[in-house]
Length: 249
Ligand SMILES: [Zn+2]
Image (tube, rainbow, N blue to C red; front, top):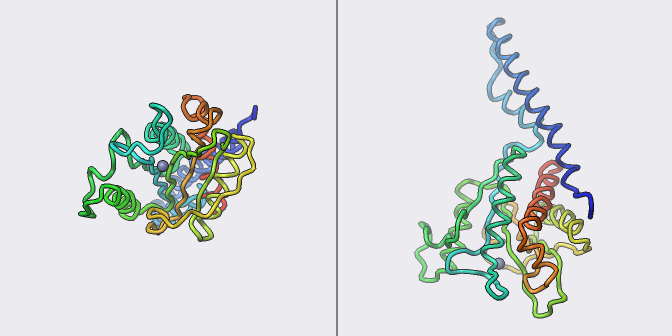
C-alpha cells in the first residue's frame, strides 16, 4: 500500500478540528452576547454542541498494552510480545491524543498490571493482572477498550492481523472497523473473529476488542512488528479503525 488510509481520516480530523475551534469561538461569542442580553448560554448546552460537532462525545478509549513485567507473552528468540505491544500501544496513544481523542494507556513501561492490583487478592498473578486491566476499564469508565496483542502459530507461513470481538453488536462493529484498516496495511482479507470466552472480553462492560497485530512466528509480520516504521503503520491503522468506528457509532 503506497497510500496509507490514515491520510484520508487525517483530513477528516482536520475538518473536525476546524469545526471544534469554530464551536469554541461560537460558544465564546454566544457567552459574550448572552452576558449583554442577560441570558448567558448554558455551559451544558455548549459542551453538548461541541461534542456533537466533534462527532464523538468525549468517549474514553482505554488502550490495554498486552502483558508486561514477568509476563512476556509470546516470543520469538529474544523478541517478546510485551515489548511490541507496548511500542504499538504508546504510538497508538499519541496518535489518538493528537487527534483529540480521550485516550488512556494502562501500561507505560515494562511491568505487569498485577503489581499494582488493588481489587483482587488472588494468589494467581494472571487473574490479578486481568482483574487490574478490567477494573481500570470500569473505574475510568472507559467506553472503548482496545487490547493489543501479538499472535503466534506453529507454521511460520501463518500471518496477518486478526481482531477478536465479543458477541455483541458494537464490539463487532469496532472489530470490523479495525480489521478493515489492518487488512489494507497487510494486504490481507481476514474477517474479525468472535473471541473465545476469556476474561477480558467477557468481564468488561465497555465496547471491547482484542487486536492481534500480527504473528511473531511469521518472518514477514515480525519485520513489521519489530521495526519502528512498521509499529507506526500498525498504530495508524488501529487508530484509523477506532476513529472510523467512533465517528459512525
Ligand atoms: Zn498476548
